[in-house]
Length: 202
Image 1: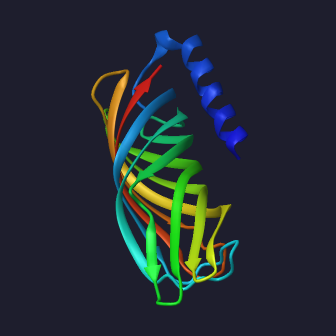
Image 2: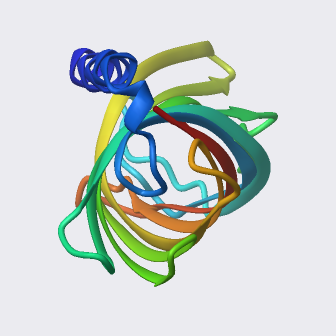
């Protein structure tokens, strides 16, 4: 998955450098950065150390980078693809049940999504997003026998939507909500995000 995200980002950058002179809002390649609020809400997800009853949620800050490509299929409709990587800050979820202390620590997430947008004006677009997400998560269990730790990748899906406004032909700002399901069909591992980003279009 990491290779796919890297390849998409490199392709968008290479295409952008070749077409820099033709930049216009919501058409062509772009790169950007985003940050905002993240909440992980866990029930009893499966882990490399077995199913663990966490039943906790955690609010934290999140930030990352993205690259993508938009294509105007008509004067008002836009289709695009985007790859991104996100990192959290102080986002470990801890549950002490008396017999053991369980820590779930998300390390990073990778996203590969498609989006469809409608231009309300020439400079403002409403859009919906959906696709694949992958999170690297470390699980630690501390009890009388010591500490055990293991990391694994969790595959999931995400949906979301937002609004993006072109500040110029090359620069746009956006606000977006995302919901991700990382449970892999076993237990509960939900993620909610409110993200604000800046993109540079080539």
